[in-house]
Image 1 (cartoon, rainbow, N blue to C red):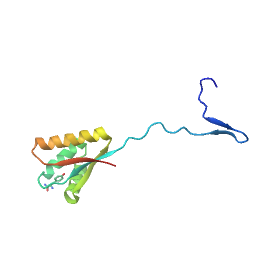
Image 2: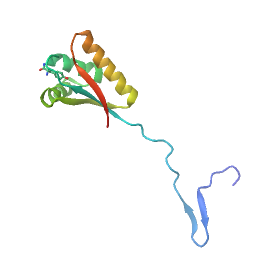
Image 3: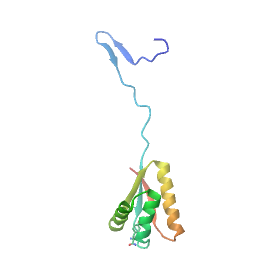
Image 4: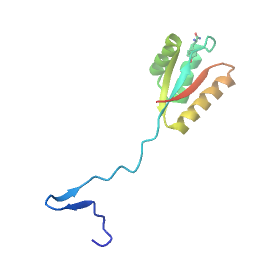
Length: 109
Ligand code: TYC
């Protein structure tokens, strides 16, 4: 057994028992990027933003925009921390460039 791994344990009278090694990688936490409704940002602008920043097709983008408009908030996508942060920054920057008060945040799932 020189240099080889041996996960088996000899148990007298019970033969060889093999135990699985604990997983060595944890899944990263995930974050929802959320749009919050406001009264001023035009619907068409929100649909365009959802396509550009989040890669949704027009149908999906329209559905999300209407969810935000009618229910107060809606999920644009779910990402790891740094991707979610970047999407929030891109969405906010694009809205500000066009003088819209759009509010975009992230929430851990
Ligand atoms: N409520 C806005 C309007 O009536 C539309 C809107 C939708 C604004 C989604 C922001 O995240 C938003 N023009």
